[in-house]
Length: 151
Image 1 (tube, one colour):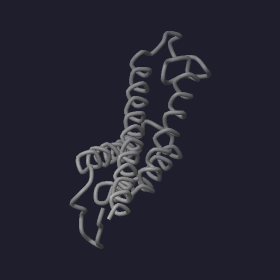
Image 2: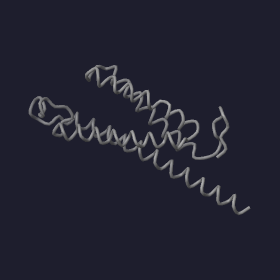
Image 3: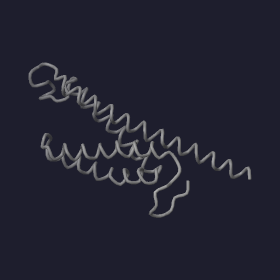
Image 4: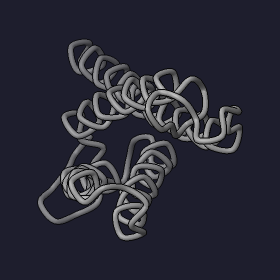
């Protein structure tokens, strides 16, 4: 893969990297929207803004160059978010939001649980897309190197 400064690469798995970057960008925008909505404490909002700020450069690197380092960061962040949201889901007794360890009404809030499950699904999808893109890029590099040695 020939990459020159300031130019978008012309070979490689473009669609795969663009989908991965787009989903990462959606995650960034979602974090910013949730931080601005005021549904969480101020410190959680600040953490969400920081997460979005960290992910934006990775999104650009994946979109433009399929940088393996950025893909590794996205995979790691997505898996960390899966773990965090799973703890929130399980810690709230499946309600997604709880007061003192129990949901406010004593009944399970299925809407909150469904939202957390959707978030977990998106995060798993993001990690899977990034990891499979790394595998494809490595496979292409191995093929390119083996073709070089034959000549």
